[in-house]
Length: 416
Image (cartoon, one colour):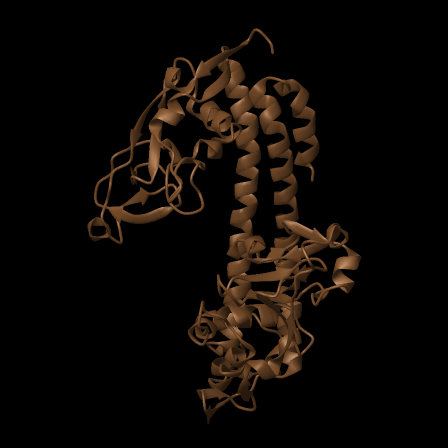
């Protein structure tokens, strides 16, 4: 390691304090955010910290050891430890990345519920460049990659909201039908598309629906595909190149698609089990345990038996995805089981929907195709950037790779 880098214990670099216990009754629906480390859990009329704070989640479910940066003007709950760096030695942003690279999850203790205590943090060893300009360059490069990932995710959230709004307008609020009843041309719609919608409503089991639309169970509109798990004891079944989906692979809502999975199986595993290869554009819904998580397959993949694959009988992909998304609450209400809730095929059969013609559904597909493809492309780019960031992180933070040496890799990614 270069002489520019020096070893420290974290106690030499920062001070620590636990966040405050805040009862739910103290929280409000507006004001300044209260941050737990897992996310914003409520709001207060006042705040404790003016600028964003570096923190580590010290207890809770699933994220103990995660290093986070809080929002500005916020309070922080006792699920996190606030880390205040000595800025004369180390910058907050560099320390954030240094902790990200140090596997703070190994500091967890406790058998009943994992937790991290301040004493463990204080003894954590870190190597820090003594030149603050080097710290700033490293932090800037890594933060720039993070910012690009954040921007792509925000773009996906906007695109997904646009697609979902169009689905709601056409198939929930029936805006084109209302417009035609009033003698208006439906907004933003050409003549051929407008002709697919009726100019009136009729009574049905669901109440008033567009005239001519069929009221039926959701089960009648989809093909349901089951999953399976190849024997884990057979090494010939695993570590292949076929993605195998479980609920841990469910994407963020705005990303919609799943394009890779944590585990993969072989062709032998596919042929030697009940799992099936799902085509691109299949909606996956988790049906057992964590119920109601959704994904749209962005590549051919398989899945476990705790999920269903749904294919629209109209030959669609996106209509079925957004229809399922709107029905998740009803499906979860119809879930049942003696040990834990399970969505069954009867759950799909128990939900009624009003179904337009196949031509209308496929016109919707065509309208949002470009939006959905941009979401998928952005997701792929996000994963590429995240891989680059995670590859550079330990080498930059340890001094094994200089900023100048890494810059060419980042510049190549800029044109991705």
